[in-house]
Amino acid sequence: MTINQEIEYKQLLTHNQYEALRNRYFNTLKPFTQKNHYIDTPDFALAEHLMALRIREIDDTYEMTLKVPAKVGLTEYNHMTEVVPKQDMHLTPDKLPDPIHSVLQETGIDVTPLYVLGALTTHRMETEIDEGLLVLDHSEYLGTEDFELEFEVEQPEEGLKKFQEILQDFNIQSYIPKNKVARFFEVKNK
Image 1 (cartoon, rainbow, N blue to C red):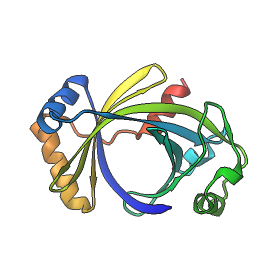
Image 2: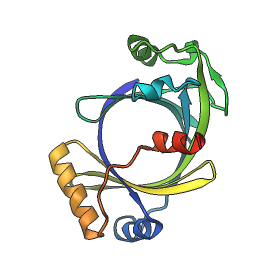
Image 3: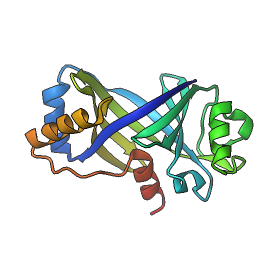
């Protein structure tokens, strides 16, 4: 079990912007694929608390992550799991690692009706630059796709400054997009 503080900046991209950034920062890299299986209650109790629970699948390994809002960024509770997620699968409370189970109970969320509500596949490239980890994503879900730039940092002010410089270099209008899980559920609920 690891607990991380996640501070990242994100920007949705057009396909052309994605290709331009790929050519500049990621031109020698091949993407790797990961699949996020999103878990919530049928009435989206976790989303109501601005939390997200997922199982990330990479090369037949599975990691369960609970993301919880923090003063700056998010607190991530990560735990390797034996659970192999399937669409509409009921995730019984005994399948939750104790720290994740405890956090959910502390917020008053009933953990008995958790289900795998769907999956999002991301083709990702990562590269380290001085200020942090630059990530380029092409995501596919529910018959749609999107492109996103993420910048994971440890120093919020320095990271934001560098992220804004990158966006300006590519004439990308900056705005705060919805995160992947929110975009997924938005499409799912249409």
